[in-house]
Image 1 (cartoon, rainbow, N blue to C red):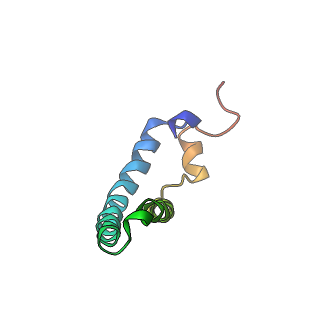
Image 2: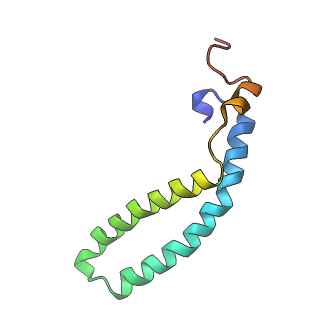
Image 3: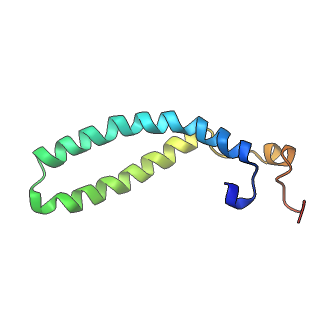
Length: 88
């Protein structure tokens, strides 16, 4: 966000909105995933299994951030002075 030239306060707002929901999702996902990993999945397939879990986890995180309102509304950016064509 900040690398895209957006104000710091918008980035902080986005992180605050998404942090707890994503953390709770991780607390639900990873213990169950690793319980299966070390109890059911054969040792020679564990790396592949965890790679598949990581792809699923990225999808869960993207969904979590999207649901938390992590995106910026165009009006919000303009009000903050982050619209295109301004500054330089």
